[in-house]
Length: 378
Image (cartoon, rainbow, N blue to C red; front, side, top):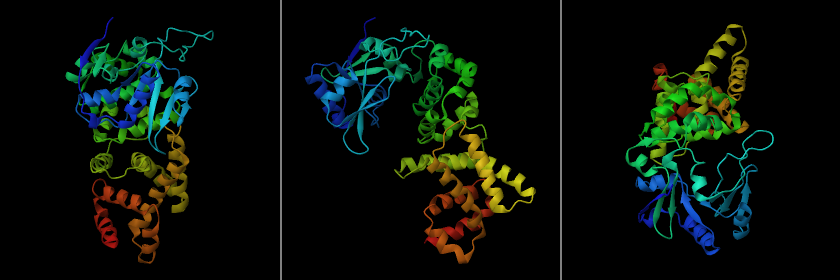
């Protein structure tokens, strides 16, 4: 099967200069190398891509040798991160072979290197399987990814049932792309998700943490939440979370902050998602005559312990979530003596934002309290 090649001259301002430098070095060393994936999709949609990934026939070791400031990442299928600053890197992956290779234990081997054509069929969705040849200014398309982008469709490469078995995380990626691109899911994908959503339960919580941050730190986060509910996937990520006006308000607020380039933190996301469950546990414990502080601490611990079995909460994050929750009572009391101490607390701003969103959604009786803290800061 020969690929379709389409000549397209993308606006050079939209292509990362460091990615072009990496391609130049690989080409000079006589390797095949292309821009690949989401960056091509975004360029075709005339959006500025966030990340630029490169695929090549050079092995990870060969890439590593070519770039002094590079590091090998991962064991099963090593990638190379070429560093340009403390936070900026370009990811380079070697073409992967088709995964029909089976090892003696019966599991699919993932570390076989292959050709460009084989690499295409290891990718998940057709919209993410386009390659760009910067030397010829051509988009290379083996799987009708171009049509899928033009028709706003999310289609799987291969049979969704098999592809979700290989990696159940693809189900939540399907939802993320559906919402991000305002596209339609192929009915085969929808059907496979309804049959296989339970497979998400087998994914390590640490891996799901990064995926959840990607899911909700975007400009359409509440729509993502709704789709996860509709498809039955949410309960495998946040079993203790139900839809509420508070969640809608908070996710829309997150989206607005991102649109205006303000900072967002996953701690805020988790504290909102688990607040209702935390409250229910707290009320039960208070009825048993426990002190407010003791009940609050125990309720927080129970809710967090249950959550980390599904999606990891790093220690720094769970500590911030607890602080946001514990400060709600102090902010509600508005003790004049403690005003300066509270405002000086490094978690004050998050706890204040949390109170404001509660007052605008599920707790209108707290509007005066929220206004009090707004005025204090002025």
